[in-house]
Amino acid sequence: MGRFLQGFPQFRQILLIGGSNPIEDVEKFKTQGANIVIATPGRLEDMFRRKADGLDLATAVKSLDVLVLDEADRLLDMGFEVSLNTILGYLPKQRRTGLFSATQTQELEKLVRAGLRNPVRITVKEKGVAASSVQKTPARLSNYYTVILFKGDIVCIFCAYIAHSLIKLNTPSISSFVHRCGRTARIGNQGNALVFLLPMEESYVNFLSINQKCPLQLYPPVKDVVDVLPKLKAMALGDRAMFEKGMKAFVSCVQAYAKHECSLIFRIKDLDFAALARGFALLRLPKMPELRGKTFPDFKQEAINTDSIRFKDKNREKQRQKWLADLKEKETPLKKNFIKNKAWSKQKNKKERKKKKASKRKLDEESDVDNEDLNELLNDTRLLKKLKKGKISEEDFDKHLSSAGSSRPKPAEVDSSDGDGE
Image (cartoon, rainbow, N blue to C red):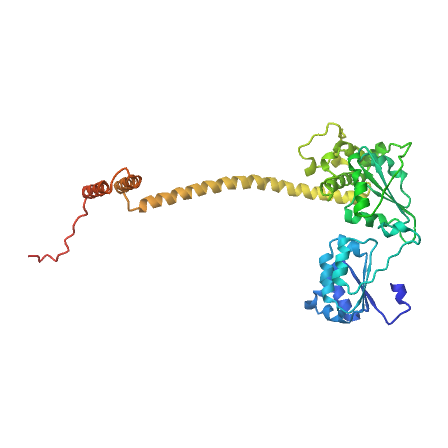
């Protein structure tokens, strides 16, 4: 953009992206202004809300003439739909808008209906290719799939398919599948994409062909495959960076199955975790919810303390050692606090029990009702219950009450006379 504007010195541009100081962006915009604003949705939305900092961007964009949304489908996939709708609300209705997208998704169609007036579609396709009107991916892109016994086979044939290719170890979501494939065949280039499937997942091929108009061809099996797993294990033992990458890749693969929207096809219970761990050349299995409570006799863990594996990068290793030292310092008082907290809870319970006993004793002392009155009250209650159940008549009930009343000791009479009685 800077090179382009060299021929138009009357125009100025500004870049608003995350990672920079928003206050500095506000000051730059206020002092220099801009005819062209290039921004990410999140930062641009934030700029609209900076009126308190002296930037009234909502007023400034009233004269906006052209809005361009590049990679519109990816913006929606990354969760910027709300931000985009907020930004569109600030912009004038009378404008020219260009949406550039490698794929046509349902979310993009919604954005077109909400943010564009009288839209005109411009589709780029090859001449004379009838299938391109149906197929959503570029005509120069070859989509392949291969069926493997378990995901561990991926590592063995990975090196056989690299140039101008996209290799999908985890099958992406339906909405992003076409977009990811299309990245390898842009601007007229020839591209290839390969996805790995387990035998029970082969129905995904037909599903993609029908749902996404994305046909896949079976990739021919690779012969004379070299087993590189021993080398990968040696690399993991020699460098903590390789060890951690293998662990993260394994976790990512398992969680991709656990969260996949096509859960009927990609079922986590069909995964062979031990074979998958061997395929990623893991030295040990990571701790994760999906593996909790399971045993894997087919996976042999290396007899090594993985905490002792060091980074080859000296700076990273120095940072790790510092982090371990800080963690050790924090753990010691935590243990003491834990014991202290436990004892304190016991003391608290003991105090509460004492408090309850004291309050009960106080109530007993302050009570005006003696044992005899309590007994009489209980007797009256029993009589009332018998009356309700029909065991005694009202006459009997009154008799008992009157007899009980007469048997009660009368309170002492107090002579209130002044002593001059007759």
